[in-house]
Image (cartoon, rainbow, N blue to C red; front, side, top):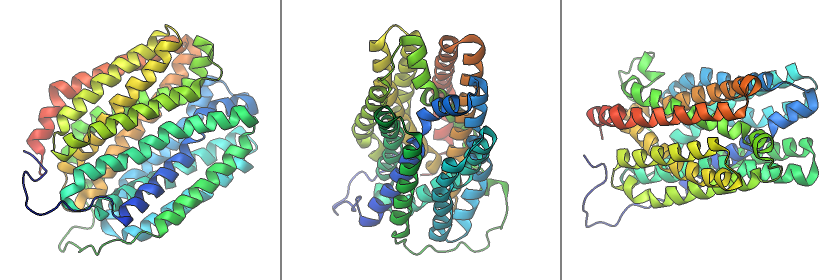
Length: 401
């Protein structure tokens, strides 16, 4: 079944409308502000509080736990109440939480702030992505969702590079915290200017039911995306320390994230036609295979060339995989479950990210990074096999549109 129209005499609806651009901008700034700090927080916790690797993993995983707790309620809120108002409230608290990093004077205080930050981060990402679906023309939705995902994937790749470059230039963590605060405020301003179309309320809908908190129709896709989130969580949080300890790379992590970003951009743009035509599973399959090769190469520690090439391959793979999966979640959800579909994929990704942070830190502390990233590579390959053998057919059987 193809979700895109096969032929039409009318010109295609406009994808890049003003509201869609605003939503993409606010999403990019939200993720950029958050991930500007991601690769440097292990270094900060080590330098500032002399924390062990396993403790660092637990502290960094705190936001994932909080995000996981708020995701199901976020989907319900944006499906049940005024989406713009929900987005504004969540985005405001996301912005304010950055002040906590500046004032945290102990490891415990930092852990509390980091964990609390996960609540508005989780709610804002669900609300913003659901708003993006609302402002997209229905005939361009698959394509638009793919481009929308580029805004946060690009931010997640570019922001760490920028953070590492700024830190090496200034050696000032406080400057990075203030920059994140300012960028989050700009994202809040962009989101506040979005105008949403009127949304009819569905009558007779029960106020509370489990499928308004988690998309049960997509449970196997949720399990599958968890595998890939785990690998991304371990890689993105420990790549700087891994590069220094295993390969002696002290100033090349920024290049790693630049290549990761390039891979994301190339794959998003090259996979756009497949998304528009509704070829979701083939796009996802190609992506997970590329990522498997990338993570395996990352784990080998053969030298700088394998380190940098793995970044490009992981970027190419994730840039194809994630938008296809997001469209698959939307494809098995009813129209009144858009928020739930968004929250469900993010719940699974967050669980994986949190597990990746904890697993990576724990294994690295007691057995070293070499073993840690070989485990990550095996998990990625297992997730790819699960998709190829089961998840593809699972999606096609349950696809609604």
